[in-house]
Length: 105
Image (cartoon, rainbow, N blue to C red):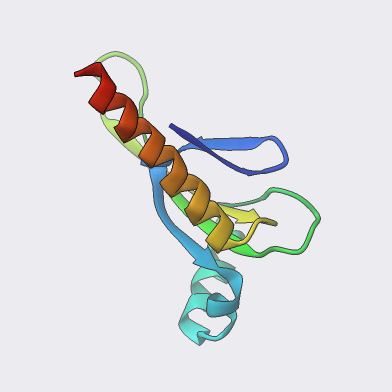
């Protein structure tokens, strides 16, 4: 299943590590430092020029060629969609996925 984060950005739900409200990040000095470093290191993708409402931390395991070692790629998306809305979308999609499994059996 996939989750729409805003604009034309859609990611696999299985890659999501966390969905964080921007307000909670702004309250913590450690969180601010973490996201500042993440931006400087190039891990952050801002989805649009709209006000950022949430951060979605993702990891994707990539294999580079046959027999190559697995590489973990971390991407943090800054989304204009609230963390509550994204969480509801993700839960809705998971519910649909699990209900399909019931009918398949």
